[in-house]
Length: 160
Image 1 (tube, rainbow, N blue to C red):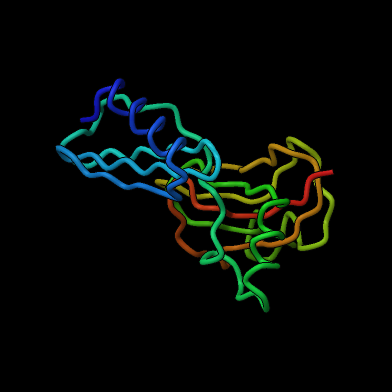
Image 2 (spheres, one colour; image 1 turned 45 degrees about the vertical axis):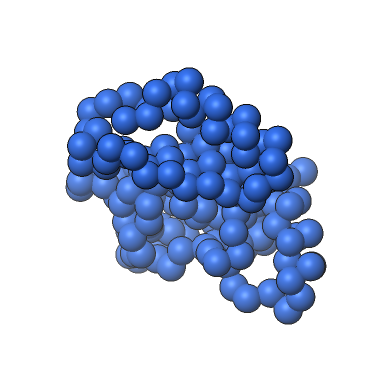
């Protein structure tokens, strides 16, 4: 398990060095720090189950989650102005409340902060995922009924 002081020191080093990302594994815990924005993702392994972890924020969006862009420079610029809506839990992503219903949102829809965007099912519980920002949905990243991980980007929203 990482000590709080160690995590703080790593964050400072990554922030001041210009490194894009660092991932460290120690004593059954894994810590990933991405340097472009202040984002820390700590994932506890089996040895650290039940232990507390550092504050967590959404990871920086990556082009690996979306479709291929025609120009790498244009994709990077586009990704910078989009806001990712990330999964707060591990589970199965569903775009609609049931198989016969229309999706909660589609690409091009305007969403308000607090509006339900999808469901992530975890252990037979349906968790409604709400938008934390108002804007236009630009991308829906996972396919319907696809497994998603904690912190994985689900939607890209262009803020207003």
